[in-house]
Amino acid sequence: MVETQTTTQYYDHLKQNIAEGVLVLDEQGIVTSANRAAAAILGCQPDELIGRACDEFWPQDLPPARQIGLQESQMTGIPLKQPNGHTIPVNITITPVSDHITSSTMVSFTSANDAEHINEALAHTQRLAGIGLLTASVAHEMNTPLSIIAATCSNLQHEVEGNNLGMEQLLKYVEMIEQNAWRAARIVEVLRNYSYDEETQMAVTDLNMIIEDALTLVRHQFYGDYNIEIEADLAQNLGTIVCDHNRITQVLVNLLLNARDAMNTSGGIIRVKSWIEPPQTRILSRVNGALVDTQPREEYSFSVSDTGPGIAPAIMSQIFEPFFTTKPRGKGAGLGLFIARRIVEQHDGRIIPENNFNGGVTFTVTLPHKKL
Image 1 (cartoon, rainbow, N blue to C red):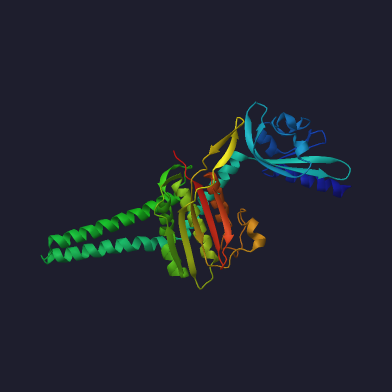
Image 2 (cartoon, rainbow, N blue to C red; image 1 turned 45 degrees about the horizontal axis):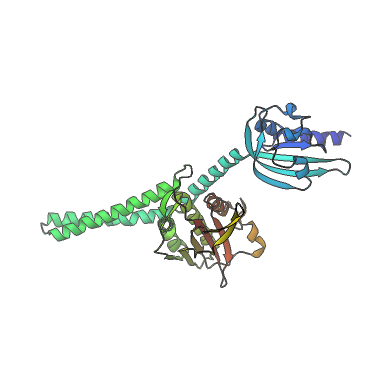
């Protein structure tokens, strides 16, 4: 008896102190237990929830939670009603619970707003971690134009002192300094944009420029430290696209780092490609009882392919899960693909992995050609 009582107290303490809101419903959908997190999300005290029908908080356009809970279900962005009349979006898991005598339903939920903030923090942290991993490559990128500028200035000074500098040579030196100064400024801009933490900023941009930005961050490190060549095949007929330039750059960097880590120590080739998706067959949709010929949306795609071993079919469905990784401990947090898919979905796009026939894997990202 004492052992059972101690176990019950332990689980009650555990339930009260977890960050996720938990409600337990009886067979009639009445709240029999609630933890502090659930009360905080719903804007009341835990004892104010006991004895109340879950339908008081539940959206009217959904079946009752007790009915949904006949089997385990997950839902996102469900607006629960607070006692003050306000609603709060939550991500919910509903789980049936039975002890062979009575049956109940456990409703666990987290604030969707809090989850979004956590995801944003994870994305920013992962972006900064990426910069740390690419420091050597970025330093090399910066060192090249700065070295050319320094050498050109030294030659210019030497020829001025020797009084043998002609106008043609002077203009050539000035042009070299200007070109490499702009190149250095461009590298700084790419770094600044990539590391900057801000809300999604949709704007007209160039998809190929996004790809070039990502390659700027990785090219030298991949070739120098990993013996990996990067081949780019970018469509020249791409128009502008509306997206968040910095976040799609992060998607590219994540896919490139993932491809790098998939290669063995002897190196390999990463191929980056961009193209316009071929027009789809027109779709007949019924609008107000009539068939309407609708134009499918125009889409742009880019892909990252590697020559590694590919992805085992058994784990293909897991690779986008947060913190899932096949890398050794300390070599990756398992967030790169999770964040990449999240960013792509925020852009109403899709990301598809596929093993190559001759080995390796290709990740293809497709984005709609939106207009502001």
